[in-house]
Amino acid sequence: MFGSKKKHILAEGAQALAVVTKVDYAKVAGMTIAQNYNYKLDLTLMVRPDQGAPFEAHTSDYFSQFAQPSIGAQFWVRYDPDDQSRVEIDQARIAADNAQVQTQVAAAAASAVPADLAAGGILGRGAIVDVQKTPVDQLVDCAVTVGVRLVDGTEPYRASCHIPLTPDQAEMIVPGGTYVTVRADPRDHSRIAISLTEETPVVTTDDPRVIEPPARALRDGLPCRIKVLLHARTWLQSPGGDEFYAIKLQVESDGSTFQANLPVPADALAMLENGASLPAKRLASEPDVIAIDWAAALAGAPA
Image (cartoon, rainbow, N blue to C red; front, side, top):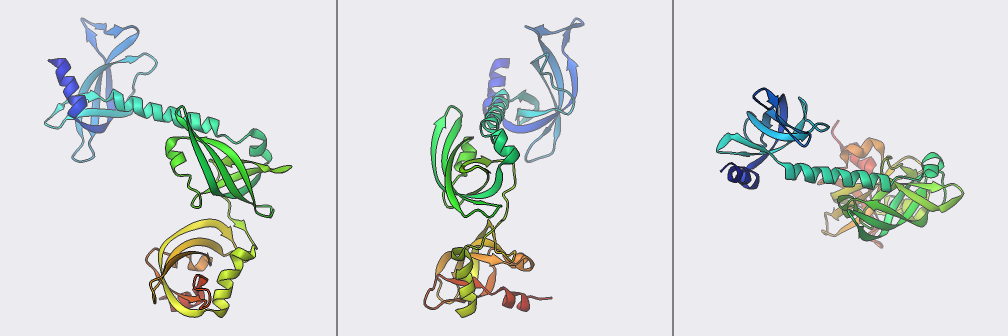
């Protein structure tokens, strides 16, 4: 009967996180209960459901002498919503969480930047151009091609490398939409490594392909208004310090929708919000060449 109850709780009970508030060794006739050097502990728990008030519960289980929970420890449990006195430790969830942590640790170790690049590599910003993903055991080997811009002003170039990632991390690597931090070998810029532990630097660019389109729109374009649909950082900035954002926008007059990389002055950044309606200028001869008129936007903003 006890076995069927335990199975019922683990299969059908509600899941919650519990905090250990008291630990006692289970005893029979004054003797501590143990099996194969695993000690049976009586635990007092504060169970914290996602919905509903926390409640106190008690459970017993065997633990290795090297892995005994202490007061304040947290782990997952299952409980009977109709009888909160019936609680069992959710070993399956704990094992799954431990496996996930082990996978993350393995990925961090496997994807660590080589020591020489970590110490002396040139920091840069990388845009994922292509990725080929191959599952290897619990990780995913990602063969990536990266558009590299280094902080030392080196001309932009492409390079390739491999990086092992967890499945969740690998899913986030999307060509044309993912930026990463890179370290490049000062003696061989084609040798790069992706750094998962460093902030991506904002790199200054004077590339006319980036700088000139919005400048021409501001100079020669006709006034219009746009609605910001989505926006994201590109980790690029103009020589004057205006950071470029990839902005998906809609021209309010004709409903046309497209994406443009546009500079945003620091004092106007608070106005860049999804759904914002902003003044802009657009070239009649090149409808996709557009720029937000931040001077007009700031002039018209409420004090």
